[in-house]
Structures are given as C-alpha cells and as structure tokens.
Image (tube, rainbow, N blue to C red; front, top):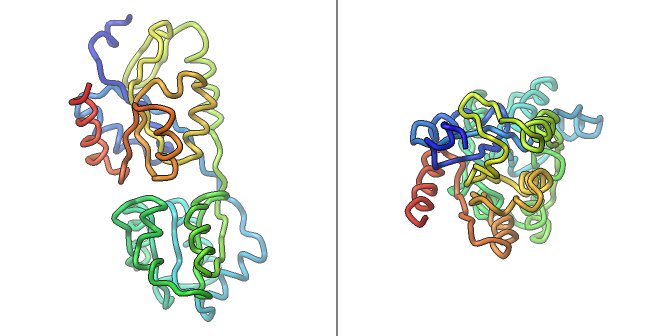
Length: 273
C-alpha cells in the first residue's frame, strides 16, 4: 500500500459533473477526506427543434401555470432559448420552480425568484406548493435533459395536469471517465490525481460514493461491476433509495447536495463504523 493510502482512511468518490464537483471536493478535503473526482454524467446541449421554439414563443400568451427547471444546465439553456426569441422571462406571469439552489441562482441572474423545494429531488418537486396546488388541465412546462425527472411527469399526468416538456440536453457517461477507468483502474499501475496516488492492487480504496440520480447509479454499476455495492452509497432521491436499499445496507439517503449536508451524513457514517 502506498504511503499516501496509509495516511488516509476516509475515501470519497465525487461523481458530480465536472462543472459542479469542486465545492464538494474542497469541503471534503478540508474535513480530512481523500477525494477522487470521477464524473458519471456529462450534459450535452441539444438544438431546439422547430416545435420547441414555437412552444417557447407561446409562453407570452399561453396559460402555462408553472415552469419546472430541473438543473442549472437546464436553466442556462432554457434562458438562452428565451433570449433568442426575445422573451424576457421575468416579465412572464408564471411561477418558477427550481429543483435546487444552484438552479435558482442561475434563474435569479435574470430577475426570476423561483421557488425551491425543501427536498432537492423529484419527490421534493412533487410536494412543493407550486405543483401540489395545480388542478386538472392546468399547464406545466418542464425544462430538462432527455429522460430526466420522469417521476415528476408521471405524477402530474396522473393528476390530469397537462405537460409541455422541453428537452434541452442529453446525459451520457463522459468519454474521459470511461477512458480513465479503463486505463487507471483496470490495468496495472497507479491512479494519478491532484489529491492521491493509489495502487490498483490495494483493491477498491473509496469507501463512499455519491449517486445523485438513477443515471449515475447505472453508469457506476457499469463501471464498477460486482464492486458497485462495496462502498457506502450516498443516494439522492426516494425512488433510487428504494431500489438500492434492498441490495445493500451500506446506504444513506441525502436530502440535498449541499456540501454541509453531505458532511453531516458522512459524520454519521463514521460514527457507525
């Protein structure tokens, strides 16, 4: 075992996208955790088709009650689309619902004051007053990536709410992540990163892995195979929690992706171990 590994007993695999990973990494390192960043999701913008452009252009007059924005990327791309159509979002008579404070911050830059659910997940969105107050046949627009927040849409449709879904990006496993995994984890040698060097023969060194969505779990499972359930799993979202808690007892549910909340959950895991 390398000297660096011997010096650390707390390992965290930060799987957040590249542009969102650093605040958590810095907070964990300050708390004594050895962190490796391995982004499991990459968000690729999609060009809006003609129908989506028409749908957005009708926001000025069409009675959409709520716009649900599911990520900072969805917020940025959606606002860019409105700007291209010369629509001022702050002037729309619409309630805005952001999945978390990062998304809300992007919207606030153009004068929007969105509502943010207490639980930053699909379940939190569903429970928010912006959506729970809806009645059948009212319109909701969702800004998302392809396949995202299906639970929210299923619940709204079951209540008779009418949906307009704008797919602004697609998600995939980053090519660099796949390459790094194949080169650094599955072959002889060492993992090189800004924070650690770990011998491959030391087996699976990270004992906590962050899973922020069902897609991240599926990509993690694809990469790690039988070892996917070996570390502690920090999971965001009730649906994913329900899926994984029957497979492993080494799991904790997150209610937020804020570094301070994750550190609180990690402290509880350390106490139990």
